Length: 77
Image (cartoon, rainbow, N blue to C red; front, side, top):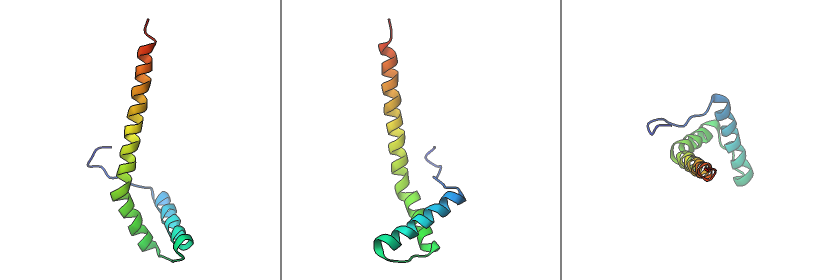
Protein backbone atom coordinates (compact mmCIF):
# COMPACT_ATOMS: atom_id res chain seq x y z
CA UNK A 1 0.00 0.00 0.00
CA UNK A 2 1.37 3.38 -0.97
CA UNK A 3 1.40 6.20 1.56
CA UNK A 4 -1.32 8.09 -0.33
CA UNK A 5 -3.66 5.07 -0.28
CA UNK A 6 -6.20 4.75 2.52
CA UNK A 7 -7.27 1.60 4.27
CA UNK A 8 -10.85 0.66 3.50
CA UNK A 9 -13.44 -1.97 4.29
CA UNK A 10 -16.08 -3.57 2.11
CA UNK A 11 -19.64 -2.56 2.97
CA UNK A 12 -20.24 -5.97 4.53
CA UNK A 13 -17.14 -5.74 6.74
CA UNK A 14 -17.90 -2.12 7.64
CA UNK A 15 -21.44 -3.06 8.68
CA UNK A 16 -20.06 -5.92 10.76
CA UNK A 17 -17.53 -3.59 12.42
CA UNK A 18 -20.21 -0.99 13.18
CA UNK A 19 -22.35 -3.70 14.78
CA UNK A 20 -19.36 -4.89 16.81
CA UNK A 21 -18.68 -1.35 18.07
CA UNK A 22 -22.32 -0.91 19.02
CA UNK A 23 -22.24 -4.25 20.84
CA UNK A 24 -19.05 -3.29 22.65
CA UNK A 25 -20.55 -0.02 23.92
CA UNK A 26 -23.66 -1.83 25.08
CA UNK A 27 -21.74 -4.59 26.90
CA UNK A 28 -18.89 -2.59 28.37
CA UNK A 29 -20.48 0.80 28.97
CA UNK A 30 -24.16 -0.10 29.08
CA UNK A 31 -24.62 2.66 26.51
CA UNK A 32 -26.53 2.44 23.27
CA UNK A 33 -24.98 4.27 20.38
CA UNK A 34 -26.38 4.57 16.89
CA UNK A 35 -25.00 3.59 13.53
CA UNK A 36 -23.74 7.12 12.91
CA UNK A 37 -21.72 7.32 16.14
CA UNK A 38 -20.32 3.81 15.66
CA UNK A 39 -19.49 4.59 12.03
CA UNK A 40 -17.69 7.80 12.98
CA UNK A 41 -15.67 5.94 15.61
CA UNK A 42 -14.82 3.27 13.04
CA UNK A 43 -13.71 5.93 10.55
CA UNK A 44 -11.47 7.47 13.22
CA UNK A 45 -9.94 4.08 14.01
CA UNK A 46 -9.36 3.33 10.32
CA UNK A 47 -7.76 6.70 9.63
CA UNK A 48 -5.78 7.24 12.83
CA UNK A 49 -5.02 3.87 14.43
CA UNK A 50 -5.23 1.13 11.79
CA UNK A 51 -2.22 2.41 9.79
CA UNK A 52 0.01 1.64 12.78
CA UNK A 53 -1.21 -1.96 12.86
CA UNK A 54 -0.78 -2.21 9.09
CA UNK A 55 2.76 -0.84 9.30
CA UNK A 56 3.60 -3.27 12.11
CA UNK A 57 2.36 -6.11 9.91
CA UNK A 58 4.62 -4.92 7.09
CA UNK A 59 7.60 -4.73 9.48
CA UNK A 60 6.83 -8.21 10.83
CA UNK A 61 6.58 -9.64 7.31
CA UNK A 62 9.84 -7.92 6.33
CA UNK A 63 11.60 -9.41 9.36
CA UNK A 64 10.19 -12.86 8.66
CA UNK A 65 11.26 -12.75 5.03
CA UNK A 66 14.70 -11.50 6.02
CA UNK A 67 15.11 -14.49 8.35
CA UNK A 68 14.03 -16.89 5.60
CA UNK A 69 16.51 -15.32 3.18
CA UNK A 70 19.29 -15.70 5.75
CA UNK A 71 18.36 -19.38 6.08
CA UNK A 72 18.72 -19.74 2.32
CA UNK A 73 22.30 -18.50 2.58
CA UNK A 74 22.99 -21.15 5.23
CA UNK A 75 22.33 -23.96 2.72
CA UNK A 76 25.17 -22.87 0.46
CA UNK A 77 27.88 -25.48 -0.12
